Image (tube, rainbow, N blue to C red; front, side, top):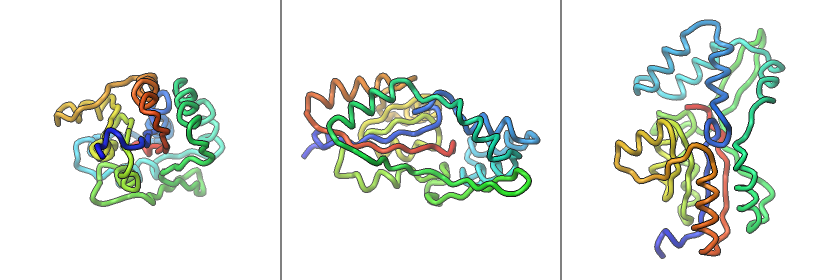
Length: 213
């Protein structure tokens, strides 16, 4: 069967894709006591530092209490198109639980933090969370992926349909890989309504909160 006729499954990056802005970068900048995080960020972006090491150094360098960090998270706003997008998908699936694949964060004494990376794969060192690995169980489906950053490249290359912006769009364009550009999630919803509905194929979906790398 052609892959275009397979039942679709939809994966989302989180920072700057499902939500408006990049909360991880914002809190790292806000709670870092020095500018070292910028050097690590630059080294990662240039491919000189694995994503896991970059993120671990940045997180361990931060100083913030659990209460203050969680207070910041209350202002996070999800893309307004996400609710109708999910209603569109759930309407034909009856899904109760949503798979989430994320890194872990522990709060230590003296406002120190520690990160761990249960989904790290040395073969995908541009990301601390090997997103392409999460797509493997769904190869029997047509995989739709939406993302924005360097850490989304492996997953985008493994997907059948890609929505991309920012650094991910630039990388795919440089490689000659086809994708749908987007700024907010309306084009993803429109794609499902205009392409998937006529095929009468219910879509599964999964959310991937991004660790920012």
